[in-house]
Amino acid sequence: MIVDATAPTVNGLENNKTYCGDVKFTVTDEQLDKVTDTIGEETKTLEAVDGEYTL
Image (cartoon, rainbow, N blue to C red; front, side):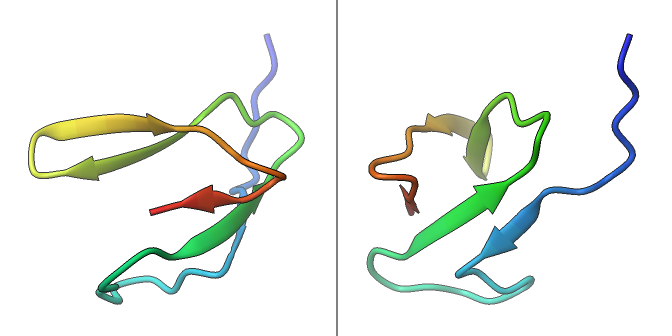
């Protein structure tokens, strides 16, 4: 079992900020399994295109 206590590095987004329109960002983590976006009760798994995710 691997215990990963290090948070991923997210570039291109800020905590507690509201974005209108598409926003591209990157996530870096050696143990990254997936990136998800949750709005209300709906959770979506995001797919990277050329290393970038889009909200």
